[in-house]
Length: 264
Image 1 (cartoon, rainbow, N blue to C red):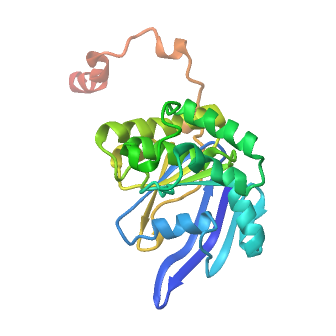
Image 2 (tube, rainbow, N blue to C red; image 1 turned 180 degrees about the horizontal axis):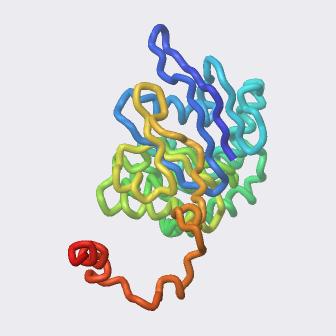
């Protein structure tokens, strides 16, 4: 779904990203962790086409976004990428329903269809009683759920989240974390989440560790090899009968050779 190759990025003389390679598969929930200044948010912004790299390529869903014009990038971003930020970034003058509708209207969806989709998402997120409320009338957890609905309204392939639970209390944080996995299971989106929250990172499918502008360990999905006799160094296949040999493995059997040598 996402392939990042040799991404470099500098701000003035400070090199923030250094030859980043990363691959994320469709349907994965991946967390990116590391100390402040490691380059996590910058990498997320480049993957999300909000910023450009100095060199390297980003491919999303088979399309190389690093070669797109600004106009095509804006359209691609609107249709294929959803964003959830630490602070909801909801427009204060609009209701929850209107905030969720806006990306769909920008994409050219009719007002009636945009409203229908926004209502469906808000209901799925438990906000059907809050659709007419403005952000100032919503709790912190409700605002973030509205932001998630807004990110999903155009059925994006990828949802990028930057410290999405950083401003929430423990209860709302746990609910939001579970929501990401529920949405992945229901809708099939790929989630890439920058976080300092160890509890969130611990439950994601994979955790990418960054430090000083580099990924500290391989960032490709790891395929586990099946456990075979050859992998264990056994000459013959392991079978139940092999484990149920005529003589059972007992402490006396382990010391048999030593005892025999002493009596010789």
